[in-house]
Amino acid sequence: MPRAVLGILVSMVLLAAAAYARAPGESQPQVTMVIDDYDYMISLFPDDYPDRADAMKSCSTITTEAQTMLTFWLAKGDEVLGRLSTYAGIEWIEPQFAIYLVKYYPDFACPDPLTIPLEGKKNGDRIIAVPAGMSHYLTLFQQLARRLLNQVNLPGSESAYLAGHPLLEKSPRRFDNLANLLALRTMSDFFDADSVLMVFRSDHWKQRAVGQDVFFDYFWGRWDLSESKTLASYLTAESPTSELVMLTRPWEELEPARVVRSRLPGGLPSGGLLGLKVVRDRTGGFRVTDVDTLKAAYRSGLRRDDLVLAVAGISPRSVKELVSLILQHLDGGAYLSITRRNNPEAVIIYGPR
Image 1 (cartoon, rainbow, N blue to C red):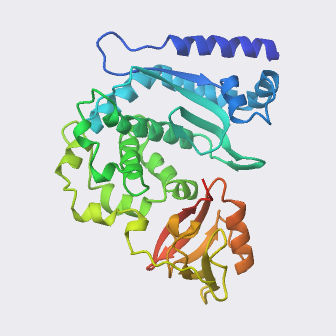
Image 2: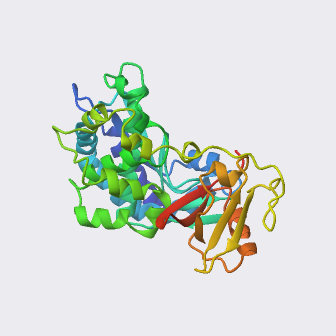
Image 3: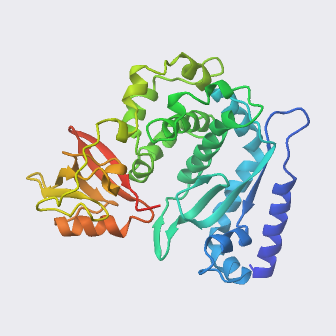
């Protein structure tokens, strides 16, 4: 198909998306889905896209899948927004927002502005590809769920009483798990539930949803969302001092800080960026024997006695390679597959902000 004709078709679809609006009296916001806002792409990656022509040429590869998602949204978007609100027991406050489908983004997704990269997470020259198909829809529902939960913090929300609940604190085991629960429950009304769950359990999503251990043990199958049993009702019934709240505390609250300022014998100096000591374990992994509580590894959740198995899906062959892999991935977050007390978990180590 000639590029000019393709451009006209894309423009027509975008106009149709822009015309999508809620009917008078409905509580859902007006939501438009935008395929490749080129000015937005240029603002994200000015070195890669010096002008609109470069952005258009590069982003043409996502047109087919983006059109498929747009078709779904035009047909089902209003219903998706309504069911999310119903199962959450939380109303939409903001009157409108856009969903941006882009080629790359610096993260796997973002709820505000709601952005979904269809090809990958990009940091500099490094790109982490994202699965296509059902995984993109899971990202869509997840980010909508995150955005809906954030409505409790907006002026005029009747759900403002939930804003201070500990389980809505922004952390992988709390807020993220609630958003994933709401997303999976709602998405199962539109897609095969087993297929959705299979995607969420994939290696890619285990890296992205690092609180899955708690999710499957304490939320999935226990907090069964429905019109009568909403997320808000479960939160209201959950005491701020309950066992679940204690269990899901952020890592930095799980053990008292030990200030370690001296050089860590046999490992990295505490003055280094990571500040940890690891040794090769007989199982083939790398045992953390000490962590400097002032450095990146500790702040990101790595703890003494954790067994590191892989970094970004790669099993290192030496301590040197382990450290090198972590440092290579710091900008976008180094995903460490670990075991803690014989339980599989994950930690994301971020560099300085």
